[in-house]
Length: 373
Image 1 (tube, one colour):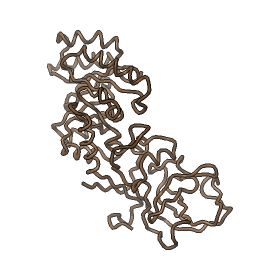
Image 2: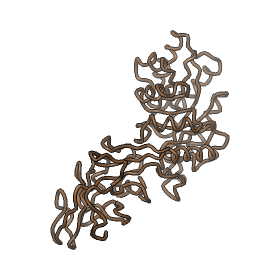
Image 3: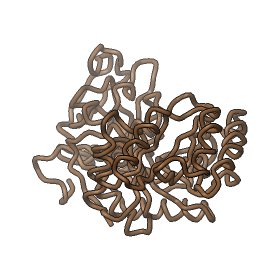
Image 4: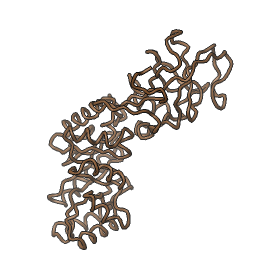
């Protein structure tokens, strides 16, 4: 049992802030002449916005991207001098609030641009913002035609607010060979030239790693900062940032032929020992990562041995088959590693048929969190 885990806690989430900042520095080096920002939306991908952002700021990062106003407010409260972009754009009637905390909305529709421009006219403020141009994802962003029409107005200073960034987003950067990547890079390169003097940004984590020719002026890494895999193929160059350990509630013997968990989907082929852990899908260990007669479950490390989850994962509990762990090496109260020590967020994601992004952002609030510098 870990001395750093209170007796009443059921599990431990350790965030390695030194690995986080090392990842940012490595990505900043890859970015070359482009500025390296940091995406800290979704509570910094589940690891803790305040802690992550402060560590990244100390490491030299001075530009951040969040998704919502609440995230922007949290970030501005702790880092009053950094540049903050609001990715989800401008909600109707929120211009004064956003401008009031010195946050730059990423404007992705003509309605948002018009509302932001009206606020700038009325307030007399410069009101910097980003303009998101859709180059093939069909999500957030004005069309290429709208951007073509807007560019002359900006060049002639007809619009009061000062655009600080033009940006787009790659839909298939995790698959570098996908034809859409080339199309989007070419489309963005062409349209960005129509906004002279305004910095341009296209690449997320995968784009940063795969397309050095498309770094433009600013890159926006997200999942790679937190140790997740950005590219589907090849080695992941990032250091792991999170370690997840759950406490053993009890050890129980189970006979061959009996079943484990809800639905009786796993029938034991041998007499087994099961470690019951105080963690479940309410804590971010997806139900789909469990096992059945036809599917192996995700792995856990118990006393140095890799073991498989047994049966379905419940809301608050799960079983791990520890039959191959020497008797006496695991006991009630011990910690079992679910992430870390070689098990990555993408390993767990694979067993749950999802992606590492979802694993990170689903980490529950019941874990005792420790941040290591």
